[in-house]
Figure 1 (tube, one colour):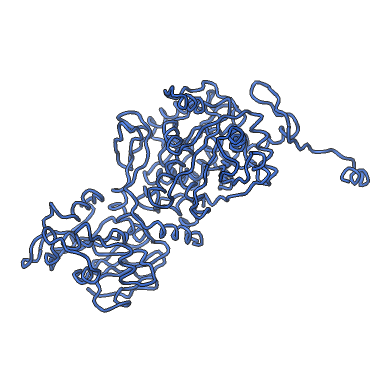
Figure 2: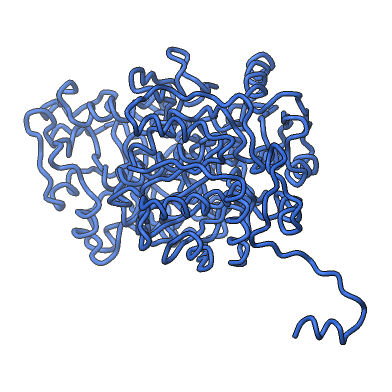
Length: 637
């Protein structure tokens, strides 16, 4: 095969050791370790494909990339790998074996069914690094992967495909769709759609109900399991990648100007690999939210130190953007034209923005008269069609689900499993910012309970991937007038059990968590249990005072966010959280989401539902002064 020059970050092993090696290694900051068979997707989405000689025409930077397909006997000899003499002897390598180029992580290299097939001898990253590239990590590999289509060496023993380790793994672990390959010449295969042939096969929708666990295609439009009615989640094969390499990759991407890497969600795309083509991604550079110290808030909450993960720094001012980038991207991938949500404010603002960015029609349904005008203004500005319905959140959600199915509208509330995938990244980014040190507690407000569901899932997956060695405890804080999950947890702790009892008329000034029948409660309950966490409720007065204390730290947040600090104050007082605990409190929305609330609190005009006056314990009322410098100086003395 004619050879083209490998450019810049690509090099051949023969340049490092001798002239007889068989494959090329490519290192590129965009294409570091992905899950098994998914590395190719990064190359595939920005190139023109492969030519007849299986050469990548160009990587994302336009540099020539190439796959060579010399015989693979010499490499296993030098890497001291064993034969499976009974089932897959090395001498059975076909002289005219069909080759299809796929990229796989170095931890999963297994060149063919004919060679290197013994499970004991899977070629690993460390073997490659130690044997061929001393002192430098071979972070990604493009290798020729043999697919047997005939023409085997008649002089050698034939492999037994029924016993071959590679055939078993290829069939069970990757389930490649052979329809995506085409014959190119007598014994050569050419990949038609590399991304969808590899990525889609590894992602699926799974029923969350442990007694069901039915599986569906990742491209089905599902919010509940058709078999049992349970919630749906995205499921993936186990991520087999070097954890330390993943950490380095995530950190390096922070300095890259590529849109995916600038996103605080897609930067961690190996941990949520549901898309078959990243050209579907809709991003406003979400995430990238800071960790902030709050010494005044820590003292108020009974802690030595507190760290706020402030999601109000997102493009539309709330954590919803983390989930919406994934939900909107899936909508584009599915070819949807209209998206809808039911919202008390933040979801509508976020969905409207991402729909506008994607060229989708946004339909927003909200409770009439029960929304922050700061949030509603965002949705109107982004061009969404807004319908105010004379019903509460839970009633409207049931209505919209009927309309979505009837009219083919894609629903982007938190029961959408891809919203959860995006919100997982809040925890990935937090851990990255903490240098992967796990805090003792993560405390967050609870409304529809999508966040705690996402956080728990993300943390469990990070642990399974070897990125962390333990889970933080999750504490969910609800407003007293909208606390069905707290009541469920109280029964759970007392041993009474049972399901969630909805609150028919939820009430709280913290509109973001004014939800009486949260759809994600089964997931949330599982995550709180698994983490060893807890659930608490707080009053309107406690939320308002905690919000003022957060403001004194120079941070600020919307009312629902302040429930975290109010809850921490109660949990430290009761001894559930120790004073010296490492606590991260998640602030879900920006200070300017509800400015009217702030003004009314500080001027003593704020009233709780039912007309009970909230005391401005930490009020900061504006003073009216005359146009007299002497009197003003006297006042300020």
